[in-house]
Length: 266
Length: 330
Image (cartoon, rainbow over all chains, first blue to last red; front, side, top):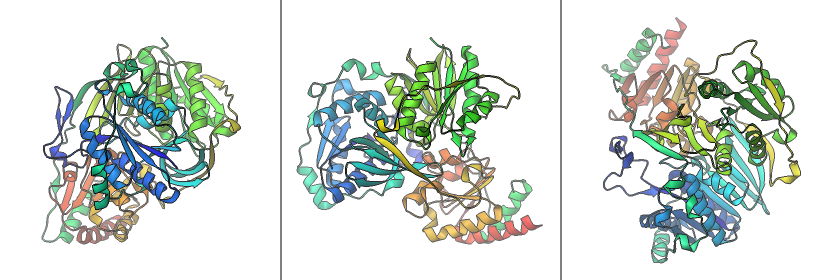
């Protein structure tokens, strides 16, 4: 079972809200000092699921990302967790591509990688949250896709997939090769082992440029984007919480119940 | 270019989904702004046609119905081809879906296929020079972005549930019904639907609840959700959870409130041991009154709360439950 996982490196989404800052003029999110970027939350679930499948069914996992040189850190982490190979797609002409441009770059890279059974992606990035890259990649490669996967059972060249719905799950059968997207409910990603970190640190990461893959440069980069950002700001909350206090927490609780009654909220 | 707006309607247990009514509300407004028609497409098994009257009374000028066994249960492959056929047939200016397990699974593929723009999880939609403009919270709700379509082709957006008002029912409204021409056979796909397993939540559904009691990491363990259930029972409330509690395996994923879980809009939301991460507040934010109980006075949840108690929930909840019980009996 050969699996390709596509990841994105993002600013850590779990920083304290007070450290989150936006430059409204430049329409950019500012990187906080001394906080390392991370693998986008659901992409890490995709890595974990790929490793769990490999542990049962064997095969090879290749991780791919489009981004700057600093993304090597996230790729190394994937290798340390248990993935076999990692490729960085880095070129000036890749920069500022939207989800569809990224999907085209990934598709070209995957054509070069060659044979695979499953492509795995997080279903939504922690930063710009377009929820589009994985599904657009399936479209680019003409693959069937199962979104928001919660459980996979392998049966020969078919997968039995449980997919999350608003009020339960649905079970679908899909033939490989196919593309799957996952979110947090599928697993809890492992931490890399010390041995894994050592092995990953010795591995060379190939960097592929636009000349290494077959890509139409007019369809990527900011000029190909179909949406333009016109404004970016932080929402403001009034923050006039009334703290209920009393001699004891029990008394405060009673007071709270009475207040909610007076306000006709209950 | 066409001036029509197409929306993807969905049904839940043979009834029109509430979110479809929200889509028709904004869809009608956008179609009127452009001076075009509002078209609704709905796919399903036999009997789906029955829903077209409802769609018309909620503002649709035309309904495209795809009735077939292949739409009995959702599969991306069949729905994608069905919806693609509806998009080709109506060639609209704008196509709107809801940010649901179906809408968000279809729209990006359709957008890529048609070289369209796609704005995901929007809370407001309008036009500027006939270009679709959207407001969409990003970075887990920590920032708000405004985007504008640049394309001469189709513009697509998905609408966040409960962001916009539902359409009004207009009795006696008339419209056209068109049957979708679909030429896919079930043998032609690489995917098949096996079954749907509904998770029956006891009591009130989270999305419909007037009161929600929600627990987070601060509860410390699965067993402690029993405190919330007791309180929930007294208040006839639904019980929810933060992503931290779901990730810890304390409660099933269907209980998750937040950006990637459910969006709730109760009159009262009681957050217990929830810090108030932005991605959680995306789901709890539409609540009219938030009450927070947390040991950390600096927790961001208090910036969103009307009332707060700083302290151990194990002391607060039993007293609160008892007092509510007393008040509700009198």
